[in-house]
Image (spheres, rainbow, N blue to C red):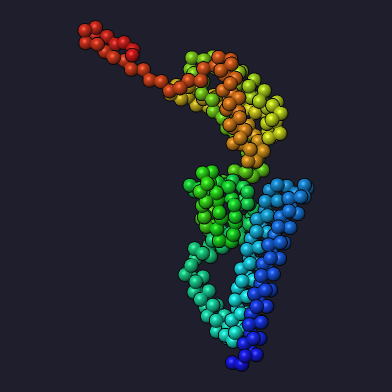
Length: 281
């Protein structure tokens, strides 16, 4: 190999690397610009914004993979390596892998369906199997979910058989309040209705409520309390904060009005030998 040919190959290789680097930078710049543009549009619904953001992230991932693979093939061709047998071998290997790795193909098909059907998007909070958390990234093969304690779960898209999207369209707080059996149930319901109505007028939380809170009444009998249920429809993703604030508000109202919220108690009866009777202890 002559020195001029070697210099020409090195120059071509550097040009390929430079163009690949520029392509990666352009892809990253375009990703940031598109994300910023979507966030500035007020007429797009939040769920649609999440879907578009997810599609842009997936497209960026595909562009990066295509650029890197193309650069590798061009470098091999530039340095005199015949890539035709390599492409043929890659095709045969891909066929063999597709036949053997059915789980991998299922993950890719699941990823396509997740994106097309907009089942969830980046930023949504989902629950699938034993995993619950916020979606950080979606690729064609897997979904990255960040749990509340900071754990990052990698969930293959093919495993998304039954999942719950906890931040889509609207959410709801279901609050059960235990009231002692000795309490007047009508009075307790009246106090509870007044407290949640006052909570709905609070300007701090009013914007997150999508309707008036509903006192559904007694829903179950516990060991030491009658459980009264309150339902509040909230903006998507706001049910946890509204639930915490509502519990604190209801507790303060019950304490102020003298409504007893009992804790589990146990009575033990002891029979004495000399008296032959039972007495509570």
